[in-house]
Image (spheres, rainbow, N blue to C red):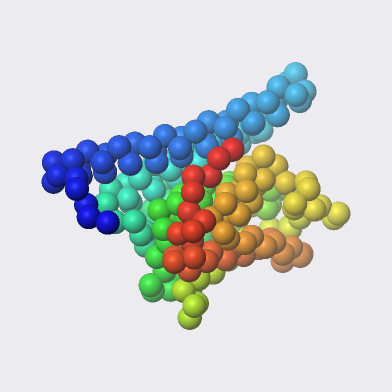
Amino acid sequence: MTDTASPQDRPVDAVMESNHRIGNHLATILALAHKEAAKLEAGADMVRREDAVAAIKGLACKVAAVSTLHRALLANGGRAEVDLARLLADTLRPLKELYGDRLRLDMSIGGGCAVTSEQAFVLALTFAEIVTNAVKYAHPSGLPVEMAVVGASTAGGSIKLEISDDGVGLPEGFNPDRDSGVGMKMVRYMIDSVGGELGTSSDELGLAFSITLPAKQSADRHDRPARP
């Protein structure tokens, strides 16, 4: 199909698309905030200070992740792909500022790992949520959390990412599909919405999440805004 838009129209279309994307992403954050607020309202009248701080920092991490993503998209000059290594490194920076010495993370992402803009949104929020939960739960005694992130692209073009910690793992009898909190349930929904898969493994050496995203050509057929 011939592009009938004038050169003057195309920058306006790009701005409208960017604003639409930002609006969708902020709506997801707002939905998570509402769900967290509802959980607190349904709980005890008195909320422990550490729980309140954790909730605020968790929300701050999600906002920081979305902010980082849109800076990356802007730096891309409108290109629809985002380099995964740079995205996660940039997302990590404000998380380390929030958690300080409690968070120690080693990252190794292979070359050529590029994701679509919507996959990037899902991964940025997923990364922020997993890091937040690790800092909160991995070491109840308050010890620093050692985390590792390993990513690579396969011969078929899919992306495989593993995020692990050195904590106490999941409680006995905990079912991630059934018992996860609001944030992780949203993560599972969003990964599914872009055609990805999320796996969880837990033992006395820690907790690991494995994420598989389809090749970009396949992802384009799934690429749609994640709705709460």
